[in-house]
Length: 107
Image (cartoon, rainbow, N blue to C red; front, side):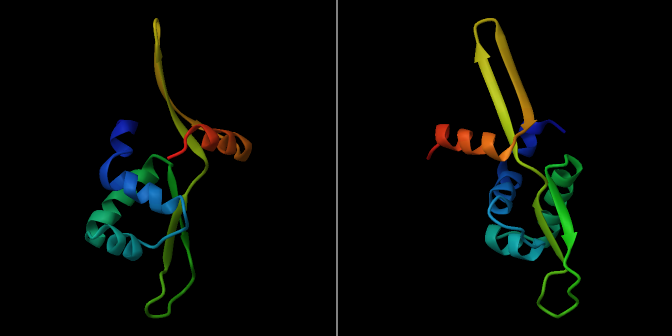
């Protein structure tokens, strides 16, 4: 699957949520107003691309999540285009690089 396709629609919304905190599939479904089946499918695609990871909570209590998903690492999807050169690439970035990029990319 093309990386750009992974970074659109519901999958992008999931990444935005997971960037803030580990989240269960049920929480994601509620926040995105969709079904658990849809969320599970999107999570599998993101996990296959190694963009997210899952961790078991060990909880067997009713109402407590058994599985939480989070980002697998810090990444930047870089698109560069200029005369004679065009490239798109997903790169792993350090915490320092992340802070520098945040200064350039402000809402």
